Length: 291
Image (cartoon, rainbow, N blue to C red; front, side, top):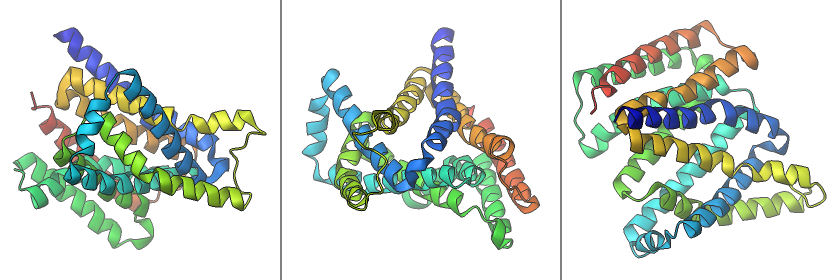
């Protein structure tokens, strides 16, 4: 039992570390392609890899179950649009040196998800979660009064990702199958965007440069691998333990933004983050109670 818990924590920590560190360095390295082409390749190659894995593990029966459910299909279409916006926003944050703002969003998104669950689905709140939500709202309101310090990218990421997670929770479909359907829905958008980029001669993905082709192809594995690692961790360790490791991702982004990429971090943002960090600590303590 202890080995299972330990392995789960290792898996989920590896996934979170990948999101917070490895993924940042990768998308920084290929930032020459620009956020639009990067999100295009992330969509195309994620769809391709999921197609291969679903085939390899003979999971097409799950895909066809979803295909026969019009309600789930519609909700996955909406969640697909949300994940496309989320991917673009995060890549834009990485490319334009706004990692600190992005980390703000991923710090507050689990707590915001709790609030959305209460507002839209009548999910229960305990004292600790109410306090966490209250502190997040204080942070946002404080930053609103200091307009120039508002981490708009972080707020967009938090709202979109919280909404996305609520939809996926209600759909109740296997993660890989759901993501495959989502990316299949947004694949035509990605292909049209790539066609427009190609027509204008702005594409970096070209058969004349196989090295860059390979680098951009890696946008797919960079999406699927950490997702698999984190979900495997949840499966082995449970929501409580693995949920705590999620915060490795925004912490990694925050530290890289401040100490490696030398992003500007104002006093007002620091105060806003202090409220958020206290909220996260309270949330984690409560999450630790989940068996």
